[in-house]
Image (cartoon, rainbow, N blue to C red):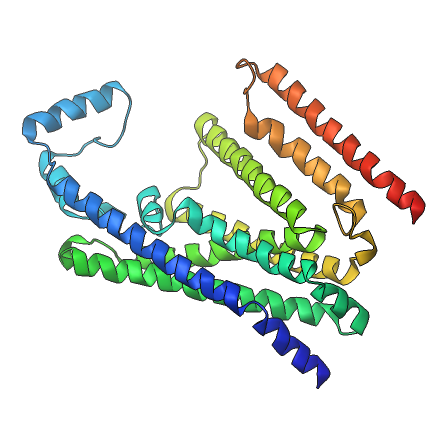
Length: 342
């Protein structure tokens, strides 16, 4: 009975945070919708005539752009009338479709909510009360995780729904151009984005000892990781085009995101079951994970930054690695006296 009351408290502790998140996501959806509709109407007022189209086609060919390949002027005019061009109806997603539903902030929201929930419980002493009470940590973690996850997914889906309805209200239905496949792609993208980013935020918030370190490593670590991943994908596709494309590539990314999220969930739940608040004065609640963080930093930061120093890759990599190792030494030295005192 006592455990049930505790789990109810876990679910109710973050209601204010989640309500703020709901308002913010809905406002973001409204602003994004207004901007997209405005851009659509601007495009309708700037349709090229035949001469301009042919000139643009020649310029695109000269610069090796493929947008106008084998496209007639009639096809161009038909595409311009649509918000989403008809050729995308069979696709689960494309850069244009995802760009109309997801912004950079859309990816940050699940990450920040995961961090915020964990930091609130850590900073307020709620975790300390749980750990000393004898309640099962795994059940507490699962309750908190799924409450936040389902709330996030629900409001993100609501935001996408508002965007879709807004398109059909503001633009003639025949020219919206969304198909069932496109809508399925939006649904799957919401699931993948929320699962992946929220799990990362929860993991970072679980293992770091204070909101400050959660924020520093969470935001910068995610940014460097995303930059490195984006650079790797771009260079791989440029030098050796992948066999997967279109819907197959989308499913590959979706499956990868879900697999990482599932592994991350169980790994974080295990870590939550083993962290000790004796290390609350350190950066990490599990100091041994310092080496995991350092390996991650060495793997993604130099590669993600690229040739940032004098446009010299070797010099840039060397300076980045030295800086990371220096930070690691400082980190080790900072926590070494505390270990001796313990």
